[in-house]
Amino acid sequence: MKPTDFAEYLTAFLTNWLTKQRNASPKTIHSYRDTFKLLLKYYQEREDMSPERITMSTLTVDVIKDFLSWLETERKCSISTRNQRLAAIHSFFRYVQAEDPARLYHFQKVIAIPMKKAGKPMVEHLTPEAMKLLLDQPDRNLPQGRRDLTLMSVLYDTGARVQELIDAKVEDVFLLPPPVIVLTGKGNKIRRVPLMKNTAFLLQNYLAENHLNSQHKRQYPLFTNRQHYPLTKEGVAYIIGKYVNAARSQSSIIPQKVKPHMFRHSKAMHLLQAGVNLIYIRDFLGHVDVKTTEIYAQADTETKRKAIENAYPDLVESKLPDWSKDQALLSWLSELR
Image 1 (cartoon, rainbow, N blue to C red):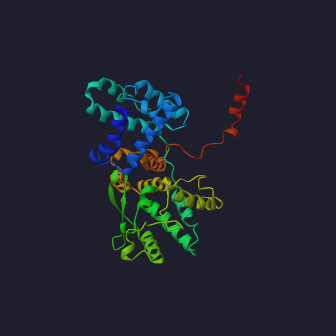
Image 2: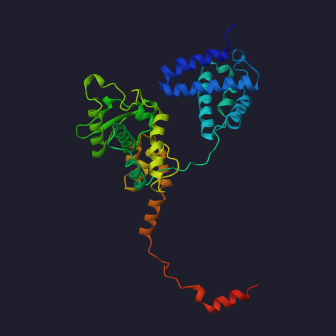
Image 3: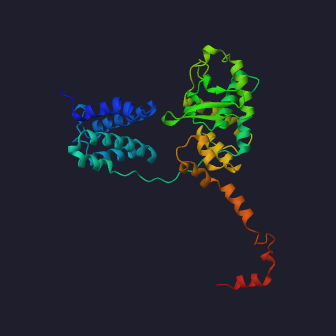
């Protein structure tokens, strides 16, 4: 059976254009691939159409809209995930319209499908007191406890994404003054993040204890599990969850659920509350646009409260009279109909 135009375009898009023209990261390619795997699944379940029968003509704007609705209703995907899948489809159709301009109008109708608006998510973060309590939980007398303390300290101190942390290698750590760690973020963007002296001290001891200082181990993952394989996102979440439960038994300042990404949010909020400029926080976190970093300023109610308190005098006296002793007022209230 002759391959369809959809099969030819999709193969070229994933294997050639994304990798060689756009220099997309493997994670981006995998995300786009997963989008089209879901699209094929939708065609089989809802359209009763096998993959080899799908053509660019069958990929109509109505089908794509139904696919997006299917993601939300049947797959229970969030709006952000739905928009992420649509972004992949947009990218594919922009590629195809350059390859087949004769059907430009058909392709641009799909490209014109708008992203769905979603409410701004709340920036979940820990207070400095809560973070300190959480970092106090690992047992420093045990090798595993020392590893976990070092891992959580690096995750917080650098504001790293979890993927950046588990991708880090021994060679990415530089402990000679000034100590830094090199992180590889989204789009393979590299940034050097300073390490505070306490975290650098923990890392120095961790590397020495696990014999990671030798030259032939420079390519080893910085953090591994008990089988010496690189940690996964689920593994990091498990480690953090274990200490969250222990900390919650001591204080209610620890939220019931602490996701690994909250370490990054917490660091950003604490920097902002310490008076660090948003531009520096943007560079520290590896954001492309400062608008992304502004979510922390918008969410920081404590800094807003302090700024308002400093800017305005107390016009309202806190020692107000006790109205319950005002007999005239009580009588008037009693007669009120």
